[in-house]
Image (cartoon, rainbow, N blue to C red; front, top):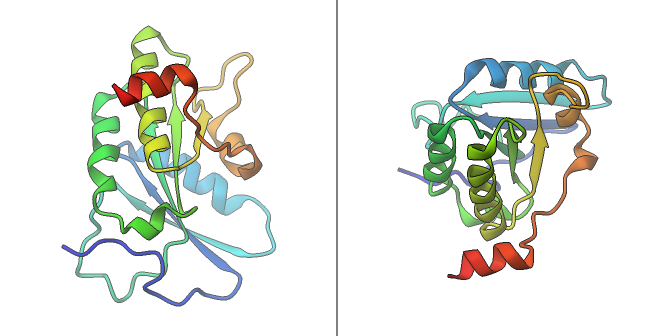
Length: 169
């Protein structure tokens, strides 16, 4: 099993490839369509995977992956576990600005808050940003397609003092 490395292939001119990793295909497809349909001056290819590692049979034909997005639904413990287990299949160079976490359903109840803290700790330990979005549109919530398109909303996940204490224990 080879680690997924960000610099193993030459980049294509004016092209970026985004890998969306999540068990829930509906959410992946919504986000992929929103990214591809957004008007831009460059080409964005979106690849989908349920988990890592990626199959080795297509390794040579696979394009260079410029961004890996782990989509974590806080309503699903399996979603978080899948993201955690997939991280071990990435080369350490991927964590230099090529990995982020997209968290959904953060406002759906108290049990999701524990998972949100877990995702924030996981992201902070790998120095990855976290994007919070909702794919169900309600009053006062931004839909996932809009949130994902504005990458300027990326914020560096930093450990606050209370998280830092929990993390270090």
